[in-house]
Image 1 (cartoon, helix red, strand yellow):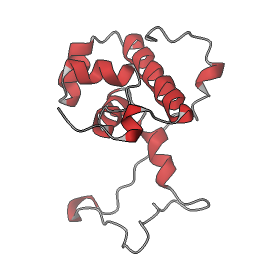
Image 2 (image 1 turned 90 degrees about the horizontal axis):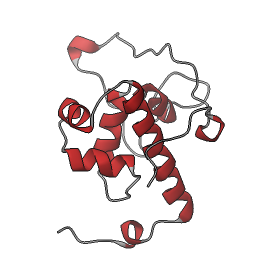
Image 3 (image 1 turned 180 degrees about the vertical axis):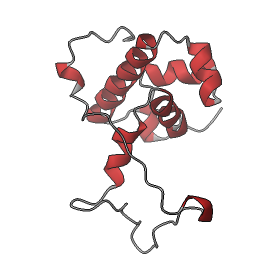
Length: 132
């Protein structure tokens, strides 16, 4: 069993709420696509338990599982906007590091998304069915 740290044992209330809300939205997105936990787990290469933990907003679930679920639900572009510098289309480099370059075969390609900005989950007309 992995060692538990203070953040996973007792995350700040705001973090706990955000993870719970994200998990509920991921569960709702999966159900709207008529996918089972097993189907989504196979698609992202994770276990069924990891997907269920993410949908419950568990703080110890790996960020890769959350990112995989966002990708499987076609919601990853919304998260990618967090890395864009305001007023530009360029990703923010880490302090003291150069920005990563795309592989040679992909240079010149850009990621685009037709999705409109997602509304806050509190204004969603649909209840999140996957709450604990």
